[in-house]
Image (tube, rainbow, N blue to C red; front, side, top):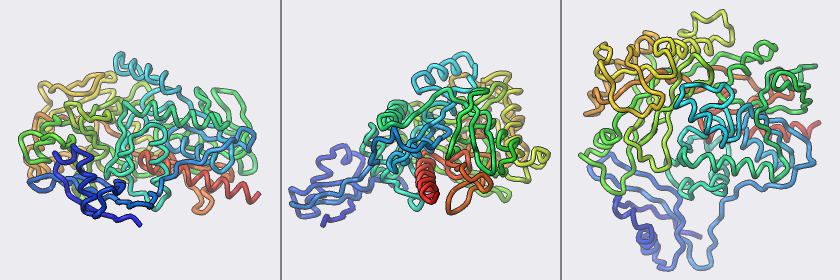
Length: 515
């Protein structure tokens, strides 16, 4: 049996992995032991930051238990399951279907990741949005351009280690299996996503790009056929709906077709960007981050006037990116490269919204939260006049002054100076303002005019939930439709979406076996 040991190390000590492993062997009294790291976390709360590492030390004759990824097989002649969307939920649903002996046919409205990159370059340079290929739509979905954060509290939802191992099998670093807050980096994700797709195709599964679903033929409480790209009819048996949180046309299609959907609370606000060095000073309590310490992050939450105001999707050393999916709207998100070595740190800074806020859009019924979200994105476009985003220095925002100028920043399409109060409702604007005042008292240096607020951050989660049965995961009114992942309201990030995709695959397998 291995010995499980936990030790503390300074940042400088962590630079020599062999020396770290020797200390574990000394502690285990086995100089020739095999060391397998199980968890690594950073504690920066005290004056001296340190890493806490948990490892298992295996003695002679002991064999470490290897994590298993997917056991894939040839499914080229197997029963087909159609999966709409090639994001984390759709791809991992497809991989699990293959393991179960079913053939996935993945329908993705956007392009393969290499072509998608060119559209993103045009978006940043020329401020033109391709409605089918952008930061949300295309191979890998929004997850491809989200920093690759893999932290999750979803252990009860499914096999987290299986997902992590599969990512390692396709090129991700081994460290994601033991880091407390693992990430891959937006620069490395495209190649990894291509590898996942190749595994699906090598087993006889299919991934069809430029295949937008814009119609459903419903008969007897089932989806009989899907309509693609304005007219191509595709007969189906089981359908997984894994379209992500921004597929508004799918939500509208379901609503028109009488397929039940529900408005869902989400969160809206801004992207908050500081110089990374300033965040390091605040978090590490020093003038300059030392060797061995990663770019620092933060996780903030305040209760203001009865609602949560919180940081979201923190990107150390990252970039603010345009996440619009249609012309005439401004949406911002953030990502980081694998080294997180950029000059700026950004985070969503948002407030929960619900039916109290959606009331002006009640005439839209189940789409009322979506229409609220859409209204503020279009308002941001009206204020900026283009894909340039409205922005304000933090102290100017708190004082209610439009900034005379804006500092250097990471948003490539460019910023325009504006009042953030013009692109958020008073209920949201006032709570964000009050929370920044509170945080400025708690975190010395956080409140500064060197930081900027960029609007709007509105795609934090889906504004719609597609209801499904608890046991079979089928839609409550359409027997062979399986809502899945973040767009359906059952996940909130890469890991939870992947796990939900796998759960849905297993549910489909059980349902098909009962037929």
